[in-house]
Image (cartoon, rainbow, N blue to C red):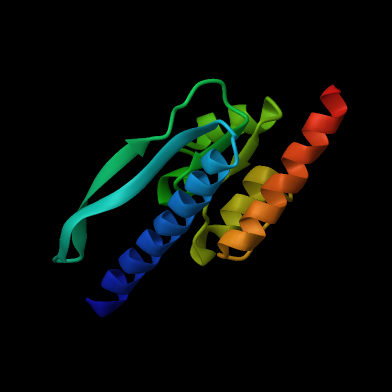
Length: 137
């Protein structure tokens, strides 16, 4: 099924983008926490083994979740954890496939939506965290 396989590749492109953002934020001296999914091996029969990587580095100022996907859209998965982060005032970044945007918008009530572009994500993170830093000084 080429469609499913293509969607899987798109999701891992998003995972690469999130890994790149996490790496740059850590290089900038920020503490980053979260989980990222990375494929291990080749896609076979529209499936691939996935390895989760823990980004835990201590107290969290930025949390990255690999995606708001099908389980979260159904009220399961990491939905409760994402809600706790948002209610706790944490800066959190995740990826949302176009087919789940309606569920995401209903869940968040209008959270920021960014293009799948590392620079745009980093500008948003910088703005959020700069506001937090100036509020604490």
